[in-house]
Length: 144
Image (cartoon, rainbow, N blue to C red; front, side, top):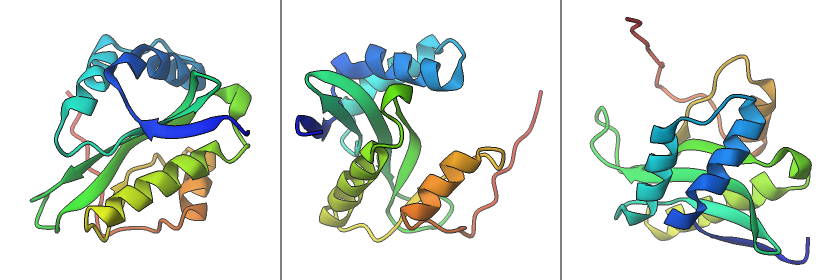
């Protein structure tokens, strides 16, 4: 992976990131997800990166720096991440995480949070390998 580059997410990456997400989940990507990706790099507190190999985006980690969330200190939140299936298992997710961690530390942060479904053992294992552990939060849902 000599030509692998980890760089900041750009608005023009939205469609490719959406395609990767659709490939991973085997479901069509929602238009509002692509719109969010287009707007994400414009946010002052954006902390999102893509992995690019020979000019093609093959992975992403979408994160934001947030303050005042239920009384916790200013922290980073990873909302989603993924690597194109053809490139999984090659350390790309680790490189994306390392860059996110580096930039979070540079921003003076001490914590990064994320949320993972219990029935996603691969993703749980990935985050555990990256040093994540359970937090004091419990995810709640209200269905309509």
